[in-house]
Image (cartoon, rainbow, N blue to C red; front, side, top):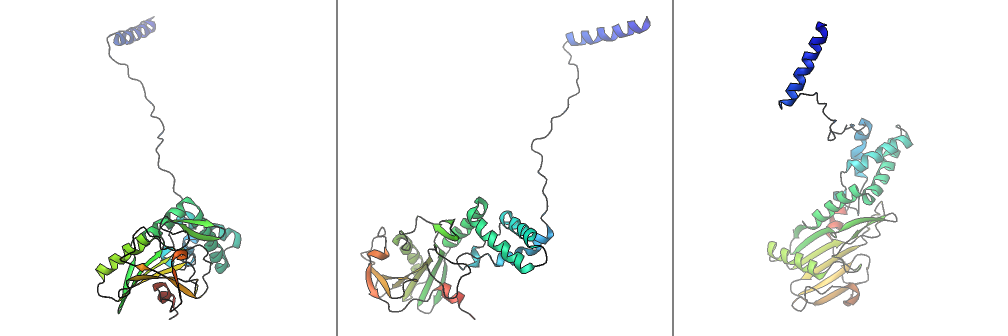
Length: 273
């Protein structure tokens, strides 16, 4: 009997507590965190050990400075090569991984973004070098978005004149910078590569896609040279009459028989030592 009285007393106390407005504490189970940190799996040491060798063979347009260190694309290519080639033939692994990474970088979002960052960064920071009375302005590859197409990597750019070099606005803009930063020279040379059909590996002396705009101060005109056209060059009107919107379209300019192909920064760097 006493036990029943005790149970009733406890129940009566709980009811009265609830009526009095005092909360009844309940055990709350915390929900699982949805923002938990992902588990990061470290890369295979065998993959990491091959990174630099593979990178050395991923070269776009003959310029190693355009090789992005985008491991999210390169590491899977190395891992795949290790599975297919085995772990004994190092040369075959490196060649297979480099070929796959070259293609994947230029055709996947992560790789394209990294490659475009390098292209735009280099184009907007041209390299100026002075050689006596000659100033070279090396723009590298035309600024734009790299695209993989049928085994080749080309660049889609609003600065291009329908496959015929860059716009006059870009030529004159870089020329104006050079005249201020390197005054007193007789010749100023704006150099740019507009890649489309660049084979890989790059044969010795290959320079297709290269345009050179030579400004001789005394002449006050632009001479335009195209590296895959060895028999002639084109010449613009006097710069006094050349308006910025003029396209400098190779097909529309006055033809002249070839005098001498200009020596470009790319040629000097690629020359065997």
